[in-house]
Amino acid sequence: MAMAEKKNEYPASVEADRKLLPFDTWEDYLDSLIELTDLRNLRSITSARTIAAFGYRANGDTLSEKEFYARRQVIESIVFPKAKAYVLVSEGADLEDNFTRELAVRERANRVGILQSIVFIRHFTKGGFEISGYIDYAHRLLTENWGSFFRGKKMLWPKENDLGYYHWRHGTVRSNISRNYKPVMDPEKGLIFQNRHDHKIICPDPQQDPGQNTTKQRIYSKKYTQIEIYDHVVRRRS
Image (cartoon, rainbow, N blue to C red; front, side, top):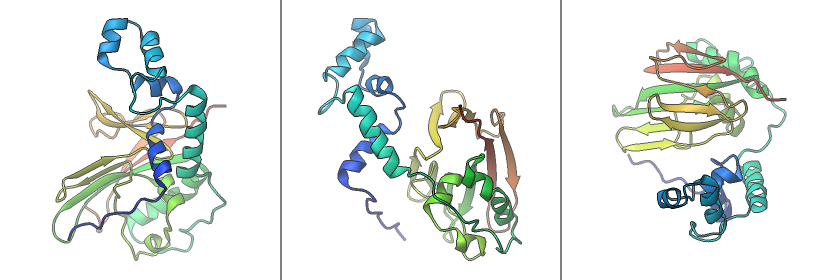
């Protein structure tokens, strides 16, 4: 059965500004507008940025530095609203399943920002098609109700708007920035994740170290084909 098309969650103007989220600075934004010919002819990144800032390398108006930071702040507050007071949903839950128990143990630390776990899940639909992906656990805790999961009435599946998503039958591959992580394609390590708070790199490649302040744990559950949890202890800048 084909997956139902998801309606836009935000107005068109908000959706348009989402493209600003991957850029931490105005300079990063300008760099995305620079063409190779600019660097060859001008031989200076500063000059190339100046050309971009004047609007010669954008479809539509190029944002000024003030406009960029103002609009990026607005879109970030809409897409990633500040955390509100919480209740531990896992309290009193049925924790017989290993996976459910491990996420329950991590719930409080992820909600308060001490820990920011990435959960990799690989599983198969009833029709035998693989769905896999990487989930920003702390992000998903804030954006949906986990009561049914912790009571054992609902399985955890990756979604198209998670950090990483793959659906074999549909041929769908997605990577998305989340509240806590930015996906990055490294030429040697492949898909990695950069924490948006302390800028440390989390590497999910099983043949490599997961990264500084990060540990990896494989979880065995009868309900899932493969589960890996990457626990990153956040070192926030003062």
